[in-house]
Image (cartoon, rainbow, N blue to C red; front, side, top):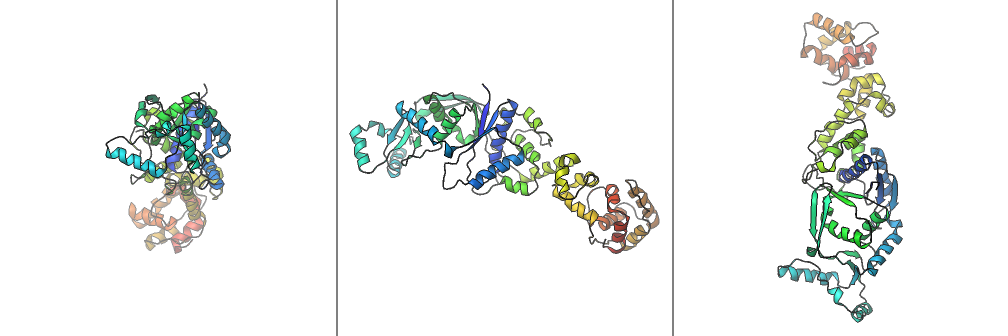
Length: 443
């Protein structure tokens, strides 16, 4: 059977790195097995779901190159869920319950006080037709629970290995609310069954749900997918990630100059113990993808570590790979080759473009040295050997050497105390601009 996986975000906010971590593992798994990657928008929360957030999810995935093969929205699939609920009712696996939230809370409190597990007692199953009719006549509307087989459910988890849940210790899950709307579980299972999803790869906060979902698949007569439960990412402070708090949103990372492949490389390896290194082809990540590498502990997403990887990625990036984006800054190949080893984001190249081509004021730390250096500037044309020949002449004339020679020259030529090799930058500055900065501090 062809592999089919899905990423199922809710369009109630912009994606954060925790969402992307799950999306990426699904995408890589699909590519590694020549399968399909489905995007399912879980947009049944009508108050919080918006078209703008749905478009933002698509924008984020397209930016990262995570193309999907099919897309569906749960808001348009009510007939699928109605059919699934009806099949469960006919099979005696979905039954009406009439307890109010307050009554259920009292039951749980009494169970806990008696040192019993707070498991629903299935009192609704003991109601007769007349009992149900009387409750409904009084204004009560039922919610609907799935009748679990109280047995142990086992599966071989793609990430965690052999797992089991004793469903005797679980309450029958509510699948349908009093107003007839569906909770997450039934639409999710019905969609996976209807869309032929073969592998469900998601966060480990869903582990305890899996036993019940396996039974729902079976009750619907559907093939049970393989499950894989990933560790949940935490931020640098150890807190969980949340769209509601705007944790490390992809939109913010993009705005900050994060390179898509650097972010993908980071999230492909976080939590695996493998060294962080740049990749320049997503196929490299596909070829090495292995869900079993992830441990049980929550990986810590460190923006500083990502920034380091982002810089390394750019240091290795050839001009042709970023030429279109550099054109927006007016940066051509000679400048990129000169500065790429000193940029943290692509926008840093634009700063060096301004330094090399616009009038700026620069510090004049050692005026006698700078005046001598200005007088000794050789005629153009200049090349990569000009810097060495010129500084040797300046050193011989002034007696300066080492830092006392090079630091004031760098500061006067670029306005910065560090940066790219000046043998590469000097020809880009040109003699006129270099002379003006050395002689007057403005050029």
